[in-house]
Image (tube, rainbow, N blue to C red; front, side, top):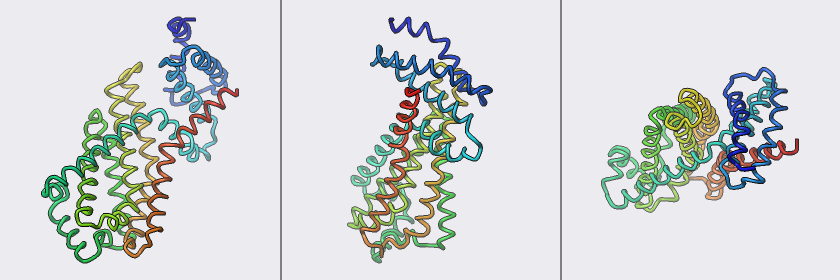
Length: 325
């Protein structure tokens, strides 16, 4: 059968699935489960005869979404939190994986801009970070403690203040998705340039490693989470600009709902980063290098696995389970 004829024959059924996904509650998940088997058959057929077609991607995403809707409806309330972090969010991350890629590429480009600009203009770091901050940091370097700025205040007070500030930055980046993603891009650009310029300043003073110990013990999860929240902002912006087959209002509601879920998933990492900055970073100068590396690589590995690897494993598991049915 030609692909066009196949689409025409099954289009109405697939649209019904899309409608079911958009509903807040499914009245009869068992009936939808029976229909779901037909969708899996369609996906298998498309993978066999239209391997390079976008139809395969569409049906795979639709199957995953329907699976999620069916089994979320069947879950007991006591399991909803676990399900949220282990299935619900990873499925969204897989679906919107290209937006995560966009956010990381944009942020890394901003970091590169910060480094290059600082290297070619001695006044750039002061322009970005402010004279007071730069002067204090340079004085700390002279005193032999490049990251002394992270040691002020009490452990508890620093933890609370830093955590709330980081949550505010992330939520702001997401909310600016309402501008079609332009505001979100600005937040990522601003933070990326600051990171690049800040790190170059330490490199120029020959204390890059000392600064890295103090910054990235907490920064690995903190910065990573900000980029993920930026990706959520891009998702929200895209839902407004590119509604695809949905009405703009329905697309916006989906983008808002999915973006909020992704942002909420970053909260534990943001809180953990605040804890590390408030309680651990202040001891980085006396900390053995191997321990600092363990914390940095460990925290980076955990958050990277959850957002970049685990979603693919969940999608693969759901897809394989579907075909076993």
